[in-house]
Image (tube, rainbow, N blue to C red):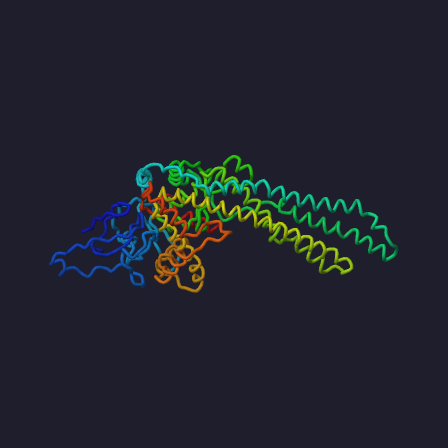
Length: 523
């Protein structure tokens, strides 16, 4: 007879065939590891029954349940069998989950398996139950984070650079332009000196500073005239499509007393960020955008994911510091474009100087020297600005880390830090090996799930290397983020369990998560 069990993670009720007694698998609702209780058969049943059909297994040995990381998010039979297989045998499975999806053993394509259609009432009840489980994890608000003295000093230094650097930048452009104008009006007599070839040389001597200086001024103006590059590879979500995500985000904002984002975007990055939608007007209107990487959602539990969001919303709450930091970073971006960026203008100047007869081309070599000199001066400005900006950025990170610890817990912060390093290492290894390896039986058509599966299958040697790298990290003068040991120590000093507790997978916040991932592939 069927065996009734309850998932210890999400409390979903599941009924399975008694032939799976003693087996291990994954809950189809939250993907948590479960074990089917072993039921003893009657003696006569042991004699008369034929051997049960063995469930499908992967070629790799199945690890024990407690050896699987809690953040594993795969829907296949990594523990020996898949509950998808139980469905195919007509078993009744009571779970709060949309349509089942299963994996073909003969290809790496993902197909939709036949399933019972849920009525609208059942679907709404399922969404309501998930919403209650998620939002019941909150137990209140956190105490406001008190700004440190170093944080305040960083804001003052950055604010000074906000005023000084643009003035110096414009002054340098004005000085170069005035020098060209002065030479053109005061030294015009040079062009009339000599006769014959001497007159030609005199005209070129008069024209050379004008041409070189004018080109140099144009190259310094170029970053101010350049259009901002649009960042692709993202999808903007809306409240109607992802209501629980927006409600969860706003709940965290309220818990840490931060403004709500006006937009939520998803990308393929193993990262999350908070910033302005673009331009000075978005900063004045506090038009804030939260960007979340889909791999974070697939590879994190809700406990860790909530902390990451709290960190970003901590930046939202930094108000004046965030605005000052954004302005200084924009200025640094201008400087970096002047110092490092090379485009059609640079290619044109190089080609003209090298292809033109040297009797005229020397003027363009002087122009290249003038551009090089102006870039050198701006490099000095950029480095001074970077020192102040990075100092402020590190203090802002410490500040945001306190928000994360107070919401999700100090020890959770340490777990999240390691998980992020593990996923960063896993992504490099995954893309390095994906072209030369055979797909495993557990892989689906969703590349993000395959990536998370790869991260969770990393060997102990790799895990030790990652931990060692994390523990030995040091902070540099131009680092925008403190080293992880400093950040972890800062979070552990908070000594708190946090105000949100949930071990559900982060993707529980999303409707049709696989469809969203596959939609990103088409961008």
